[in-house]
Each structure stands twice: as structure tokens, then as C-alpha cells.
Image (cartoon, rainbow, N blue to C red; front, side, top):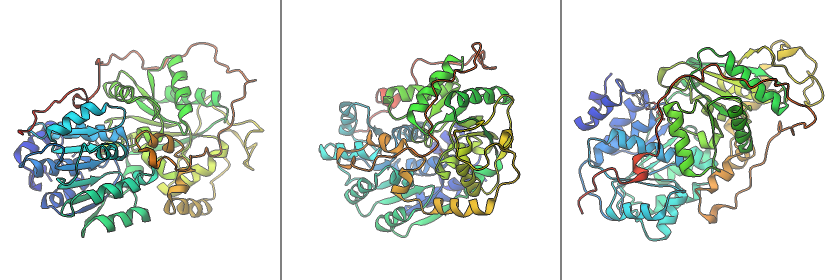
Length: 498
Ligand code: AMP
């Protein structure tokens, strides 16, 4: 099936062609005609499915006639994080390059003045994180009564990050006659209620989850020591053992580990850079740009910072820590094996983390292949609490009891509540979300660290004898001075007539 049959006009089709897409993904095939028809849509889909184009392409088409008025955007897209917002904006630039649509990006970490200037000129498309949008609304700088299309993207992530009260307020300020599009990877009850309150007879489209995890991604687990420096050593060994590796994202559960692992990898000669919510916006965008260009080969990231990153062709995902919420695993490994490419996801696990591995296995409905890497061993004794301690290296103690694991982990998945999740694997969520949130909503319970966070023993020295080099650090890659998207630097589109 080609894009031509979906009802998109020539200028959008030509931009799609230039982007190199030959066929619509399933969500694009189903969603584009619905969005074009003006109906409300509930898309249950994750990043990696092509969902961004499924709403941006028809939006561009629908907005291509009409005129923007000062401070009254014609459409509004809400994103939970700055990175996602910036990526959607990049998508608009790519797909809307043959139109004269104007766009503004309202995210934290960027000056209000520049954002105000754009709003004053009038924008067709406003892309915002809820916190920054509320700030602008409270300052009287933006009015939502001209919004014809409202998109709430990554709604379940909005829930995790405590943005639902803001979303409700925003939805109430947008005209009742608008078209409303909701996208969410999962449908917890809170999101279901939100769609009932703010959508009118939405058409529901669900994109199968299984394709993300099962088919194109080689998933394995390596059991290793819980000592931090031995884990970092294991990570390096793993990376070097991979022959097909071109670039990778290394996920850590905690922000401070993101920094430690990034620093350690740099010391060991890897082209690595950290990405987490405490880094300023400019640095995060630059890091992302360098990763896309290949100047940085390993992105060391927290869950929230990496959520939904649009990075084509990531060959490897490494979980430095096992995510304690199984669904985060799906999101993490979704960074590889995208759009039909094959990918590799390798999880480092300590014995104490085995229960989380089992929860993941229950969620993806198969066991992760257990691998052994030369020189990587598990805890010898004393640090973990699993009854199987003392079993041979690699934990090859026979098949694990799947049925028990499935029960408990399935419960964890389905029963994901805001509080419950916050205390789980997404330890970076609370702090990171605050960056984009108005002060009034900052009183959410602080996320607590889960188990498995053993203090590093200071009395044991790493056995590193010489500086190690990764196998592939001599590839020449293009670099650029700044990877800030153009729209962040200046107005890159001709402004609409006023
Ligand atoms: P998304 O799910 O929107 O984050 O998109 C995931 C990735 O798929 C992005 O890198 C897109 O550029 C890419 N993509 C989107 N639509 C298509 C398509 N029809 N064909 C190939 N790649 C696509």
C-alpha cells in the first residue's frame, strides 16, 4: 500500500517521499484517513510505530488552508518531555517543508521572550509541554480558543509524570468543537477516563505491541556482579563482544549512574555522552544531535530523557540496570529494531534483579536468552539475597518457574497506577518532570529508589590494567557545530500574513 491512497495532498506526499518512506506503517494507514476526516481518534501505539507521522501528516494537510492569528494557535500538540516536543517539531519541519505553516515550540529551558515573539506573530502549530504551556497561559500570552486540533501524545507518560491535572485544565480551555487525538502506549483507567471526558465518539486504533519486542530484536540477559565497577567492566566486555554494533543506548535506572557510566566509558575511550533531565536543554539537544550524526556512539540515558527519542538505526540497547517496571523494558528496547530493522537488546542483571527479569519475560511472553561473556561473573557471595546463590556462573540453574513469575508480573503491568509506578523503575520521572511543570504540581511523592542499588564497595579495586579502547572508535563520522533544530535558533519558516 502506498501513501497516495490515504487522502494526503501533493505537497505532503512529496515531503514524505523525500523522507524516504515508501509505505505507511499500520498506524499511519489507519489513522491518517480518520484524522483527515475530522473525527476524534484514540491511538494505542508506542513510539517506533510511526505514530508521529500518523498525526502530523494529516494535520499539515488540514491546516494548509487558513490563517494563524496572534496568540491564537490553530492546533496544539502536548508532549510529556522537552525532547519529544522537539522531535515532533522536527517532524513538522520535515513533513511541512512544502507548506508555509508556522510553528512554535513551548518547552522549558528556552527563553520566554523568543517563544512570546513567535506566539505574537501567530502560529498554526503549537507544540508544548504542559508545564510551559500553563505558564504562558497564566501570563496571558496564549489563548486556546482558536485551537481546531488538539493532540495529547504519550498520554500514559503524562500520567506517570503527574501532568493529568494540567491536561484537564488545558482541554477545558480548548473549544468543544475541536478535533481531539489521544495517543498512548497503554490505557490505564485514568487515561480511559480522560478520553471519555474530552473526546467525542473517538475511533480507536490499536497497534499490536508484540511486534515491538518479539520479532526483530534479539534479546538476551547477562548475569553479572552487583558491584558497580564490575558491572561497568561487564558492559565494556559486552560492547566489545558485539560484532554488529554501530551505536547504542545504555539505560541506567538512576540519573547519577547515567553520569558515572558515561564518565567511565569516556575514560575507557568510548564516544559516550550522558542524557538525563538534569542537563540543560541546549546540552541535551546537542547531545542528541551528536548521537544522530555519529559523533557520539553511546548515549547513556535515563528512561524519561530517552523516552520516545526518534533515533533511526540504533543497533544496540544495553540495560545497565534491569528496569524495575517491566513496561519500561519495552520502551527501552523499542529504541532498536525500529521500522523493520533488526536490533539487539542486552540486559545486565544481578541476581537480586532476577525477579525483574522474570517480570519482563512474562510481559514479552518469552524468556530472554541467557548469555555468558568471558570474564563476566556473578556475585561470588554475600551481596545478594537470592536462595540460588552459589549456583554456577551465568546462573544456569535450569529453567525458571515461569508460571509464578507470569502471575505477579502481569499484575504489575495491568495494575500500574501513578503512585505504584513512581516507586518502581522510573526513578528519574519525578525529578525530571518537575523541570517542565508549574510549581503548583510539584508536590507529588518523590520517587524512591528500588532495591538492587547496592553501595559500591570502596575496598575493592578494579582489575583494569590498561586503558581499553573500543573496537570501532576510529570510524570517521560527520560532525556539526550545533544540532539545535533550526526552529529553536530562529524562525525558520516564513511567518504567516497578519
Ligand atoms: P515514531 O513512532 O513516530 O517515533 O517513528 C519511529 C521512526 O519511524 C521514526 O524514525 C520515523 O522517522 C520512522 N518512520 C515513520 N514512518 C515511517 C514510514 N512510513 N516508513 C519508514 N519509516 C518511518
